[in-house]
Length: 372
Image: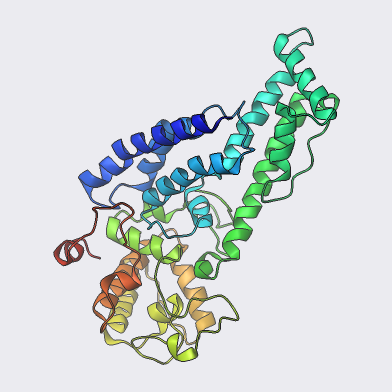
């Protein structure tokens, strides 16, 4: 019934997205728009269209909701600088933005809190009472749609109680529970992705506080790493956008020879091996430069790992550190450039720089000038 509304808001979001975020990218260069600014544009200009009418129009039709969710994923990928084939959970965990379905449901719950606080003589409260009566009789109603949305969330939530058990305080607690379980769901979703291994078990660093587990937040490297090429290289590494041969699900039937490192051929090609274990001359030289930079700027002696498990821990310690992340991002960018000219491998095979929009293909001179 509301398909036309969803289509209109999708088109409005697309139009403003092209005029703002994409417009800034075309002016500054792809990926040059700082994610912090991109998020500000998102909340100021796009979120109002993505959530318009969500207090009354509940997302019971998955086809209609996908019209909005698809463009939402497109916007978030553009803000992070990822290609349109990248995964979804890292969009939420790295930018600190809740899934659109949860945000729209939260606005409906806040409207419900307003309604239950009204006096019984208020017309809106009478309409809510009628909706509860229809729901109890098995007919379609606003409260029935809300109960349906709660049942079909990708994570468990308590069923919607009867109207007599609801209050403003109950709605506030229910919203907190919704957000808490959504964060846990996104965290579990990230941990289930083999391509996001560097995000498994990470601790978010803070400038003046000890590191701790944070499921959804705007990550430190998005503003700590100010050089756009370095930030993009680090973001794509963490978000699984490097096309490495050894990154597959457990139990994959891909032959071992097809998963070995394309440069040294000694071990499975993973981010840990490529960055900290591979014996390639250019990569080894970049590691020595990283050691020198850490020693000179931070008086930190980086001990190179000898196993894959040690390399995983060392790489996480470098990236998820308030200060060390800056030289680490520079190192990751330099290594990724080395892999561009490896044998017959195309420049786009290792790095996911496939354009998200037609007409954005770069020639070799543009790619080299941008550091990719």
